[in-house]
Image 1 (cartoon, rainbow, N blue to C red):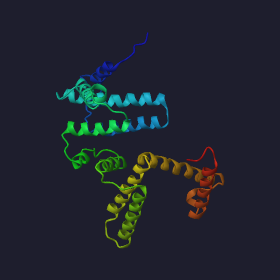
Image 2: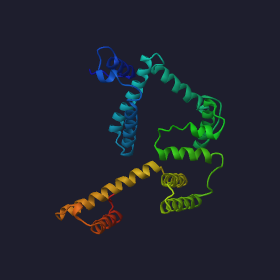
Image 3: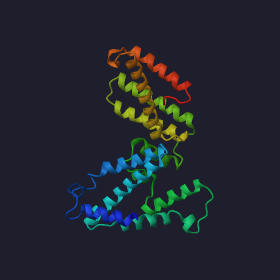
Image 4: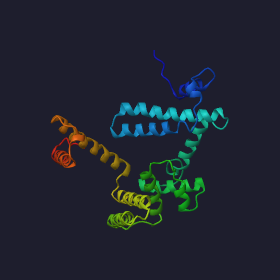
Length: 267
C-alpha cells in the first residue's frame, strides 16, 4: 500500500532538504531569495482557479503550502518560530475574527461579517485611524489591487464618489491633466498617468469588477487577436514586419468582427 503523506511529512522533507547532507540549493535559500517564488506560486494557484482546473489547483496549492513550510523552517533554523507557531497564530486569528461563529455575536449577512472583520482587525493590530489602516496594506501587492484596498478603506468612512458617473468624470479630468503635462512638458507624466490608473480602479469598484482580472483578460484578448493578425499574414506568405500599419489594422478589424460575431470568440 502506498504511503499517504501528510503535513508532518512535508515538514520533515523540508527539514531534510535544509539539513546537514541535504540539498545545496535548499540550504542556502532565504526569505528574500524565495520572495518571487512565493508570488509566482500564488499566481499559479489563482490561474488554476480562473481556468477551473481543479487537478492543477491541487498541485498549485501544494506548491503554495511548500512555500509556507519552507519560510517557517528558515525561521525555526534561526530560533524565531516554527510551523506550529504559524498554525497556532492563524487558528487564533480565525477564532477571534469570527465571534459570530465561536462567540456570542449575531450576524445575518456576509456584509455584516465584513464590517465586523475590519473592526476586529483594527482592534487586533491596534489601528486607530484609516490612514494607519491604509499603510498596513502590503506594498508587495499588485498595484491595482492595492489601490482598490486603499479606496475601500477611504470609502468605508464616506470619502468616496457618489456614483460611477462621478468616478468616470474623474478619469476624464485625470486624462486632461496628463495631456497637459505632455503638451507643456511639465515632467509630471508618470504622476499623472498613475492618477489615471488610480481613477480607473474607482470605476472598477463601483462596477464590482476586479481590475487585475479585467486587465489580464484584456491582455489575453489582445494576444489572441494579434495571433489572428499574424496567422492571417503568414497564410498570405507575408511577415508582419513587411506590412504597413494600415494593412495590419485591416486584419485587426477583421479579428474584432470575428470576436463579435463568433460564439467561440477570439478573446
